[in-house]
Image 1 (tube, rainbow, N blue to C red):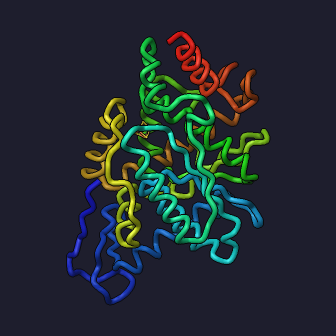
Image 2 (image 1 turned 135 degrees about the vertical axis):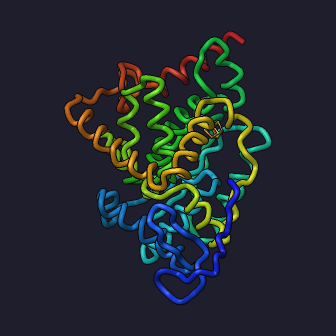
Length: 315
Ligand code: SF4
């Protein structure tokens, strides 16, 4: 993403300094300090309004090395500055040649700068294959690269978070991620997976709660926050990123937002209402194989792992 600094020389809406960012949806103009403070405050409000974290929780922060997860780690360390030992970073190495190494290093650098601890797990150690190998072996299915990656990463994060004894897992999903995924699930008819989109997800199993403290913040604001805070984040795009429909949906939504500021946030609000009305009446199922929450008898993680392991054994 290209970050544009809007140095309009207009004054900040909250002080006399020059503004560096204007929120098109609200008209608010903010200087660097007030912009950064607003991101921390928005995150704090989201955590509070969804009761995402409880006093004394051990918090696993899923950090990939991208701008969202590194910024989330920075913001959560500010918000928990007196109990920082309660944060443990979990990082998943999917096994993407010439891509993941940089991200894992960036995450480890930030972890050591903040004096935190980190658990790094890899697809290879957990499942017996790398993402590169898995994608070579899914020939006879139509499942996209990002779907395979997302399904397995979700399982890997759960396993790592459980291993470190976390009560809650925080991920860096932002408002754009939510709205894009909502559209992807709508267009694929995958209503069962919509439940996992919620800002707060309690599995009612021994898995930690999953929370998304950046869910009400636009992606471009997080990128700008990372820029202002001087957080180095991964610059190379993932080699698989343009294989699925997400890039087209992202471009479509960005165009809508440019022409109708605030439309992504409105969509988010509507989607939440739909989710709460459809899922409150639905009985939650468990995967018959692993016991994790699932929209079918066997969850997508178990199906995907089994399919790839079967293909591995015949190759
Ligand atoms: Fe995984 Fe897709 Fe992200 Fe690449 S772009 S890391 S394949 S989810």
